[in-house]
Length: 336
Image (cartoon, one colour):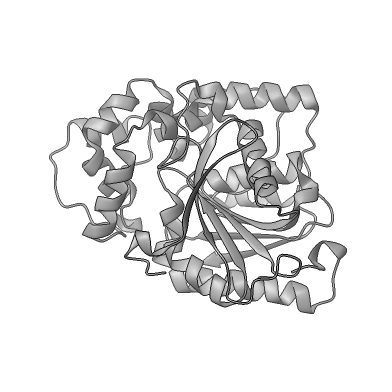
């Protein structure tokens, strides 16, 4: 498992009971025991891949865990439906549950970053019995709301999320694809280089009108090329996540989904203090809905924690899980 050699990982592609096909990496430890080995399910965000976890997979496997990292719907080798309604978090969570069923895994530690953090939080609501513990990174938990808030209003209330208006627009599909290399350098920029990225209209202007240059990136050239090769298959799938707000709201309201995460579910939130998408106000608000909450702020780090703080992330999560199992706390952790 060499982080710089994607093919050195164990790749699988399977059709799920939901009808969708998922590509995923599935790594087993040397002493794997299906009854005793804990499983970590890693869920990436936008615009990422299973590859976003390349620095964590090996160390966690060597610590005795089975690690599963899928390309989420719309990405890489997984199905890419055109209809945005197919990307609602209820359907994504059904896919993840179906993946666990396929692999005969009852419960997992679920770890999500960015959109994966949002999806992981919803998985804890839609499928609470499948979780041992939950780790969310960079995007704080936000509970289901009885009020539908369009993305334009979200951007008005939280200007740091203004870029989402562009992502939600259909025109972004081809525009981002046409300038994909520039878009990846901008998006995977260092914390200090992304100042003009977030405000409404700023990203669109940078992408389409600003002169191209060597924007500082947290990725090296080889890593950027891998992302380019995978995401050049099409951007409509990844961008569809930003077009699901109404579908998600209607599904959650119809079901009466709870706002509070399960009372016995251990939750760890990790964020970088230089990440513009993780604001103190939203972080403080999210705590009200998480009975068993812990958090770790990574000073000076930005959004791409698995790369910027790869060793800290690997060790912090592993040590947190070890502490949970050694503290003799709830039944959820009896198989960790």
